Amino acid sequence: MALLPVDEALRRILDGASALGTERVDLLAAADRVLAEDVTANLTQPPFDASAMDGYAVRAADVASVPAALEVIGESNAGGPFAGEVGPSQTVRIFTGASVPQGADAVVIQEDTERAGDSLTVREAAKPGANIRRAGDDFRIGDTLLRAGRLLDASAITLAAAGGNAGISVRRAPVVAILATGDELVEPGRTPGPGQIVSSNPYGLAALVRRFGGEPWLLGIAADTLEDLQAKLATAADADILVTIGGASVGDRDLVKPALEARGLALDFWKVAVRPGKPMLFGRLAAQRVLGLPGNPLSCLIAARLFLVPLMFRLLGRTDAPLDERAAVLAHPMEANGPRQHYMRGTLERVAGALPRVTALASQDSSHMSALAAADVLIVRPPDAPAAAPGDTVRVLPLDF
Ligand SMILES: Nc1nc2c(c(=O)[nH]1)N[C@H]1C(S)=C(S)[C@@H](COP(=O)(O)OP(=O)(O)OC[C@H]3O[C@@H](n4cnc5c(N)ncnc54)[C@H](O)[C@@H]3O)O[C@H]1N2
Ligand code: MOO
Image (cartoon, rainbow, N blue to C red):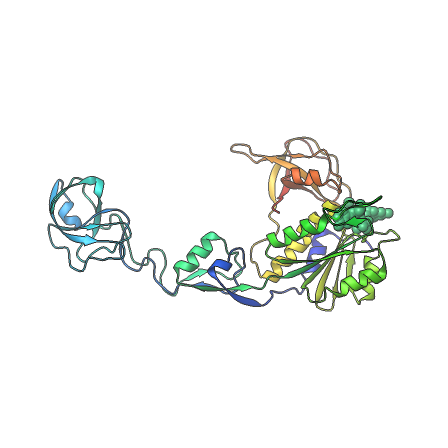
């Protein structure tokens, strides 16, 4: 099979994928979930004309020329409005957030006044509307506050709450089953025997899945036998997405593809023109989407960021773009690229008033986890890109996981 271009691989993975079902959660459980329905305002905010400052509610005409002498006739507190009306040459003591009483059309801040008993001297003039937040300035009952498909961050949750919404409809989190494969693997914390290494990838993948709103489901490590692979794959039938790690290449023990095929995998593609991540496979086991990621840790995580995360966005109904490429300027020359789209690990440096400057790390080995942890971007080198010079503009993808 020929290597598939990155865009085409992504298109095929997303083909026919649609948003999962919805569930209602209360506001405290809504953080980082994806909104499934528009949120509307059940209230108007502010619900009344409110003072923006601590001071005195006045008739602007009374304080057009200063100093002006006024009589204090009462008080309006946040939560305790003044019941009467402010008449000519009268004023009401008022506090931030309190309702502006009838008759008043401006608020003079406390610092611009002098008080003696019920007498107030205003030293600064105020125009009509000064320091008043009008009813509905922020939003009105029936307004659409938030659109479906948006990630619920702190500001969105604050707005939903202010609009009188106690519960929110969100997308069900996609369940992503993760199966490590390989006789050489032991769980972290165990001492590897001869020829063994620690199975690190599932933990990084689980973090990535959580980070983007999914529910990771770790299936452990399958041995390099068709029997064990098939048995472990069978336990994942209820997951929305099945991810296998390793055993995807052409070695004699690379049995993931045959094991999946024996379980009825409809293979869509195997091998993508991407570096790292080439031996990735994608197919379907009935309704379940299956991503077979390579074993090299960087290949695994970077392929997951490039292909699994956009699929999760789709299942979550997210409307923002899953891959946010930006421009940066190269700090050094770069050789021409080969036929695979190369996602090189790099570090980004801010430059005042100009595009940031990017430096590729010395190690671009797909097994060097220390390099990935030290990087803050991936430099995207398109297939067969010509050699580049310092100062050339390149695309970078922030490492956001
Ligand atoms: N003759 C060829 N050999 C290889 C090719 C090729 O095209 N022709 N592709 C290379 C590329 S590119 C990659 S990437 C790797 C991917 O191989 P597999 O997906 O089959 O992965 P494994 O061989 O099982 O493992 C590779 C490497 O990663 C380690 N590994 C595996 N699982 C884990 C885990 N859960 N945690 C940490 N590390 C893991 C494994 O021990 C190996 O060191 O193939 C190249 N070969
Ligand atoms: O694609 Mo492999 O991921 O180049 O090491």
